[in-house]
Amino acid sequence: MNATPATTKTDAETEPKTDAEAETEATSTTGGATAETAPEATETPDAQDSEKAGLEDGLDEADDADELDDEPAPRPAFGTGAAAVVASALGAVSLSGTWMGKTLSERATLIGQIKTSQTGTAAQQIQEIYGNSWHTTALVNGVFALLALVVGAIVLARPAFGTPGRAEQPVWVKAVALAGVVLGVIGLLISAGMYLDLFAALPSTKG
Image 1 (cartoon, one colour):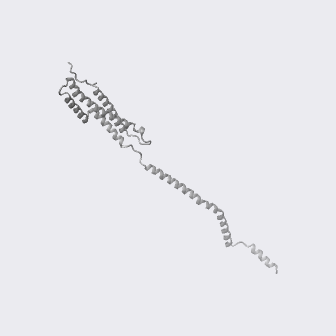
Image 2 (cartoon, one colour):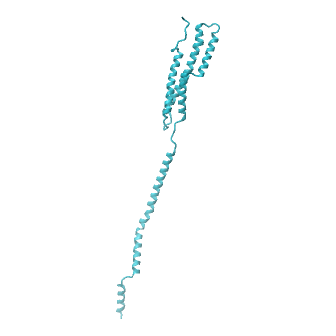
Image 3 (tube, helix red, strand yellow):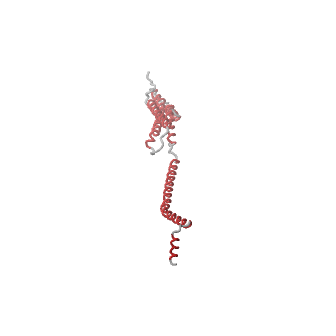
């Protein structure tokens, strides 16, 4: 009577497992695998944060580059162009004559007539009336020619003493300034010749 229970216990241990027991074991096995891979899953957010930080840095650099591109490029000052035109105009005026030169010339003529109206000789009248008027015109034209030369030279030399990184002068500014310098030089030469009576001497009373 005592051997029967032992036989029953052995049969229970050797019975195949039911479906419920198999599912329980599979679940426990899956849970273990998930637990093992958990550390790897925790590393993924850190990698994503690093990628986001890199993207943000790239966007910041792109914004800075856009801001630099949006900054207006340095432009040449308008004063140099205006000065170049003034130099050219002064040079042309020094060759053609000015209202100021004409007025001062007439004044010199009037003064010469007053001085020689009573006791002046023919030579004195020529010098005071004609010579002084001629020399006054030459002197005024020479002053305008000198101004044209100085202003044109300053415009041409301005880039050498300007702010570093400033835009280069346009070609037309250089051309007009150079024209003013050339006209100023020619005007100076003509004015000097007029003042020194190189082109035409004063009339002489000698036969």
